[in-house]
Length: 424
Ligand code: BJ8
View (cartoon, rainbow, N blue to C red):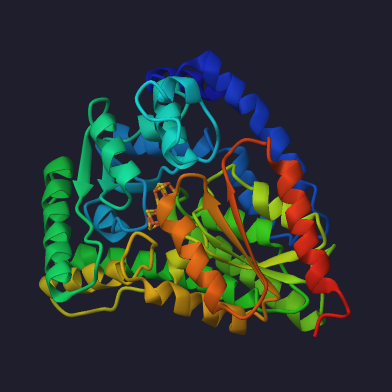
């Protein structure tokens, strides 16, 4: 990492604070990810990418910018990454998953705000995230109230383009969203100086669809019983999909899936627990937030699927090839509006999807993960609990380690209950 100090300094990072952050990450990774036994060999690529999280990938962004290219950072799966690629830019997901400079962030934001938003501002204020500092433009969206208001603050520190996301899916909402997609095209053209043409959109759609297809192939393999990959490793791959080069990632995910196919054929499962099978649902988990899956998988269960933006919610819909430029933009707008985030009302699709996943993945229980103070997901949890027919545990947590003991107790009780031979 020594070689990168000049680059970090040029990006404006606080080197001392950044050293502090880099000093703790390997320990967390070792304890949570590397400590698992019997991992597929194909995970070595993802271990490498993580080990270079602030190194090699940042150098790629740096070189791209030196050559005149632009980097665009996003905070949400509603932002069409195809358009960023079609404009010749690089897309990076910026959701932050650790407590950083909370006190500083609380000078601008209330204490009772979700950890993800606070962490994002904390990373910015502490100048320890080389991704956000590499961005020529940030793209926000009007999803939850906290994010909307946060983007106003962030815009004072770095340029933010906000996409207006409707909260319903009626015809008028679709028209509004389609216009927002058009405005985003104009903003990207202005930023990059490149005209976004049909052929480039088609090529970018192919790249992103291929990435999502590879992630869906991985998701399909997680139906295997015994499981061929742990929930933690699958989550890591989905997290890395937000910042790695998309074509390289697609190749590596497919290589891993070839290995998992062989594991499946030979009946080679992961080491440790293979049942009960848990569906983890709710708010996204950004790197290095592995707290809940780690508790589940060290308590005698396996996370068989994630219904989250850092899980199947990101990959389940593809953009259809739809003729000319207008048709392509319509198809992109349609694809993104299919996402069933809890900020929508009504949001029956998410409930139906959870039921489907419970059935398709042979799920024994659902653990619903809400970040504290996230109203949309916390409120939807009540309805989901009423309407699904497997045991359900709703947890509200943040990025601190203070509740690990209490969460472990609740999760162990759930696992004990569903593992009981008396359970009908
Ligand atoms: S599409 S889940 S990435 S908005 S956890 S900031 S909702 S208060 S992250 Fe999300 Fe897009 Fe939806 Fe996915 Fe607000 Fe809740 Fe915080 Fe959240």
